[in-house]
Amino acid sequence: MQILRKSNWEGFKKITKMKRKEIINKVKESGLKGRSGSNFLTGLKWELIGKGTRYLICNADEGEPGTFKDKFILENNPQLMIEGIAIASYAMDIHSAFIYLRGEYSYLKPKLEKIIKQSEIYLKKIKLNIEIVPGAGSYLCGEETAILESIEGNRPIVRRKPPYPSESGLNSNPTCINNVETLANIPLIFLGEWDNNLQLFSLSGDLKKPGIYEIELGTKLEHIISCGKPKKELKAVYFGGSGGCLPYEKFKNLRVDEKTISGKGAVLGARSLIAVGKDRNIVDISKTISEFFVHESCGYCTPCREGNFRVLELLDKIKDRKARIIDVKLLEKLAYHISDTSYCALGVSSTTHLKCALKYFKDEFRV
Ligand code: SF4
Image (tube, rainbow, N blue to C red; front, top):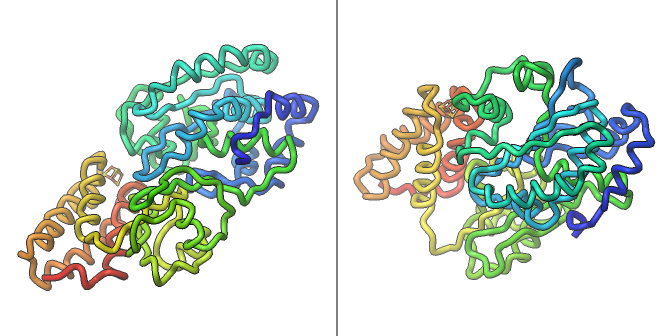
């Protein structure tokens, strides 16, 4: 696997002989985009950072259901990510970096601290301090501005943008936020023989061999799923909890990339594929995902706080065969209303699964 390559600070040694602009240009030209699902050009993000005291935050708060690719890197090759933090910091003239570590991954903190200590010789060279900040387990803290609030010690509510963190982030200073997989790829760009198309996929669900697979973007859905060896005939594939679903048989020949998946109404996001067997009920799955969003909603805005609660009530009614036709119509209306009017990405994406389910599996929402 490309992501398991050992760099041993060779990438870092190369960049310290380069000018900052050259490093940023090389990252830009590489085509590397945010691997959290944001798909924003990483080099451009670095270029856009404002002037003055700046910060770098490594977003290690991976909370999307079915996603565990950053955990895989943190467990198996964290050195690469630390080296990526050092390269990014040097390129943007940053001297203070944070790793915002998902609460559930706090068992990895001692290991990361040890690597940071072992890397002192390189970090001192560029006067870089790296601090680990453990999160408290909120899904919302995967959003970059909620991370800023959390590190500042506040309740993590998503900030209104603009201003973007690149202008006014941590303590109102310009801040660059990159995710674990994005940063781990940085040293590889400078080592050469790096393929931007090889990306990590988290495969789970009704599979004999769930796990992390490094697969070329644009590979057929059937081939990706076959890596995990389906246990049974499949009905659907879900793209995490927030990316919606597609019927498997109908789309198994689809080449998986952001564009093709969004063209069918779902969102590829952080490349988490959950295989769902033919024996499973889509209403049950919709209910489980809606319960997750009701639990994770921060309560700040009405569409997400109240709307998802009503969605859950309606799904309960449908599941118990107590619903009327009007309830299914209301469910559909709510799904679009919540995504159209919620304040942040959590609310906006909280009903994608429902919109897809109603589009492709409407016959299961029986009254
Ligand atoms: S959409 Fe949900 S999570 Fe986002 S601000 Fe509104 S209530 Fe909070």
